[in-house]
Image 1: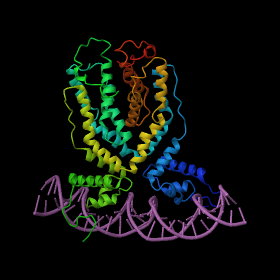
Image 2 (image 1 turned 90 degrees about the vertical axis):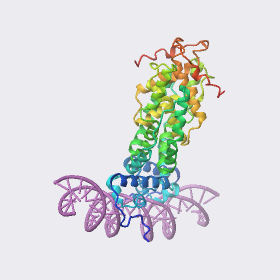
Image 3 (image 1 turned 45 degrees about the vertical axis):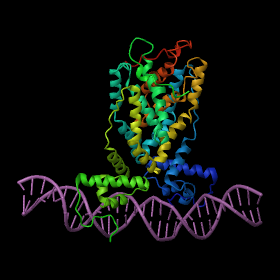
Image 4 (image 1 turned 60 degrees about the horizontal axis):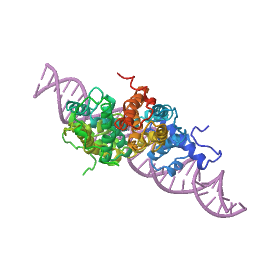
Length: 221
Length: 221
DNA sequence: CTTCCAAGAGACACGTTGTCTCTTAAGCAC
DNA sequence: GTGCTTAAGAGACAACGTGTCTCTTGGAAG
């Protein structure tokens, strides 16, 4: 009646079969215990094997976790929705992301516990802090621009105001390098400014200086 | 000649002074060793105190790291730039974020090493995977929309195409909950669609059905 | 059947963990 | 100042996880 997780004389697994068992075990340990408390020992026992088998493949804890995450993700395809309209398609695509893999993501991130918290802070909160909470900076900038007549305060929603910062953050998170100026210019010139002006052009009357943005759109083909 | 990091009989620190020393030490250890290899022992020695002092304040490693990160961030104000134009202000604000705190963020995230890698995958790559690499889904959607005449393929840059997904991801990362439909609608109706149409209205000629988006903008005040 | 590789199993020294003890310095109230 | 209270400083402790190494043996390939 050995309680340890070894297969006492049972069939010996190899290759993909074993690897799947290892990664499943790692994922299970990860979601149950969280990153800090995940141990090679625990994973090995759950997979009914020895630590050496794990170390041979993933010398570092992060690599093991990494592999386990990718392993679990490596399922579910993702069919582009086709609702018949651009608006409907985009909405459906976002919702689809929401309902399928996002479930795993949430589970991962919440159960990742320790592993997540500090990084959550560093990514979200840190950059949050860097740009200043509910970004008063953008608020100030927008108000000054409104005073100059560069934008119409009522047509600019909170969401629109957040766009540059959010895109910037996302860029940073995905690349983990200082965001190059070319990307900043893209964000400002190809996204934010067209957005700010989108609500102004049609009415054609808010009559005000567009001079401040005239230098735009001569960068990219 | 004791090499351990205890203050043999020196002044005994308290309160804020001690706390600062502890967090500075934690930050130093974090940046030098990375998260996985950061130990209470190491931090205590560097701060010339005992582990108990640390455990009293931050019972878990993640909390200690968390506190250290916040401690280091808790400096540098962030003055909103004032260049005289909306465009200039926004660009300056993003660049400012880039050059000041982002340096620490990069250092943190890269040195965070292990701690970061898997989460980088889970946040960036995971959601990346969820929406499919260089998001072919959005590509497909856009192509179909272009075929219907809903958008002009040449005016839609890669950047614009990425906007909905990026904003969605960012929302998720910051809230760690499934993104509510209201936000999805905001992203699509207040940002993406105005953006897609921004390049079309002025020319007023691409003559095509705008019917697919007519149901927009009756949700928010 | 033989050869080869790696799985399975366990041993090992070492470092870290959390907790607990005891002392003594610092800070506060009177 | 004197005395009281709190927590810093220091060290001991068992328990545990870590990497690494060994050895045996089963599975796959020729």
